[in-house]
Length: 137
Image (tube, rainbow, N blue to C red):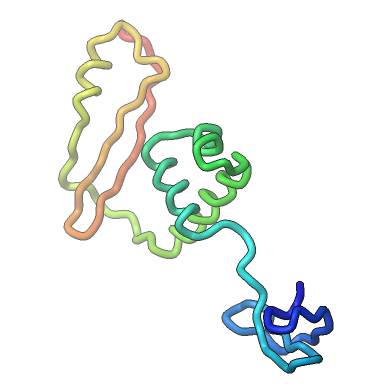
């Protein structure tokens, strides 16, 4: 990495600013920071949004041109940050059922199907997936 002003390769470390290394050029005394490495946050948020819409890691990989492992790591990091915002569990008073539940219930087997329960609270919504695994008699 060269000095952006004089293109010299001689530099010394000059502290840290906003969690990024800062340098000072030995020749012209210009102070500069290292460019941000990695993908922009907007791309990571787009990957998260695509994942929440139901796309798989490999589909997101093909669309965004990013490794599926990278996408998985982004989703995991967002999930770790989510734990900070979670509230304690509370009783669900209002429940909405998806219309697909009626369709699945009419089938002979419910193996591999699931029922998405979404509880709506005043300040938030809670979702829970109940998976079916039994045959109807």
